Image (cartoon, rainbow, N blue to C red):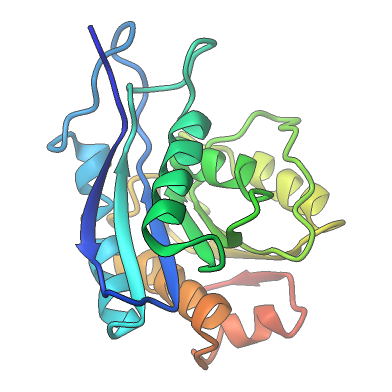
Length: 225
């Protein structure tokens, strides 16, 4: 079965100041099984993309990436899909338009592993699923925000914190722990969605977004909300 990546537009101004790519999660369900636009891990990112588009006020192009296959294996990974999507963005808007990656679960992992790509300036890793000693590459000059629920039973909070510490040697990193937040981000979803959208606005568009992210950008790395 042929599989391929797809970009779904949420907001596409003709001359955006920046571009946000929204990356879904989702475990594998068989070899090279195609991603469905209606699977829950994909649908969960729709309101986040909408929040980004609303906050961008026509200055931000927003796309949702559908991966070429579900899950993560040795043959194809979501990092390959992100690389393809960045190429599509460059063809459409040019190489100088900065890109923000917003990913959930395995999409958060893909975002972190893609942070050093030339166009990428900003990353949000929501409930990122990471190995205990995830080899996250250095990302000099990038602004990276981890947002993780303290009740997440699928993606390890401690693994995410360890990755944030390692990445902080090269990038500007903040970590926000969401009280009572779970992996699906349904409880307190306005907090998860809002932090993601505000981080992109602040780091790519230069908007003032207030606390707690102003504190993160001021150098306070660990916060709880």
